[in-house]
Amino acid sequence: MARGGKKEAVVATRLREARTATGLSQRELGVRAGLDPSVASPRINQYERGKHSPDTSTLAKLGEVLDLPVAYFYAGDDDLAELITAFHRLSATRRRQLMRLLQRGQS
Image 1 (cartoon, rainbow, N blue to C red):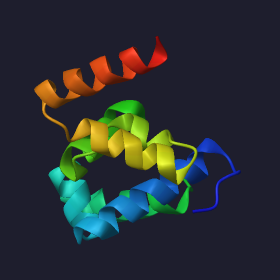
Image 2 (cartoon, rainbow, N blue to C red):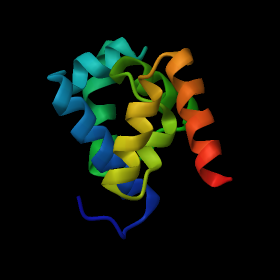
Image 3 (tube, rainbow, N blue to C red):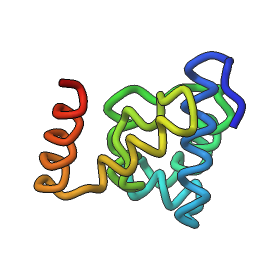
């Protein structure tokens, strides 16, 4: 995925990719995230085109539906986005194990 534009372009691209990967329509994603059904599809469309950028609270709600943390949407490259996603989806126990392993590797 090409990056290099504004953060809005990164958010728009990541949101569109995450939504399509789940198979949700723009309307369904918006409704599940708590948007009014009458504006859900156009609002998500505007976010995905980068015309408007969701605030952090809205992005967090969209992330909950997509099982992604807010940080994912701002990740500047694909490897970082993948790492954020993988860490987010680990259990608390596995996260602690990974953090201990990483800390030992820095010593």
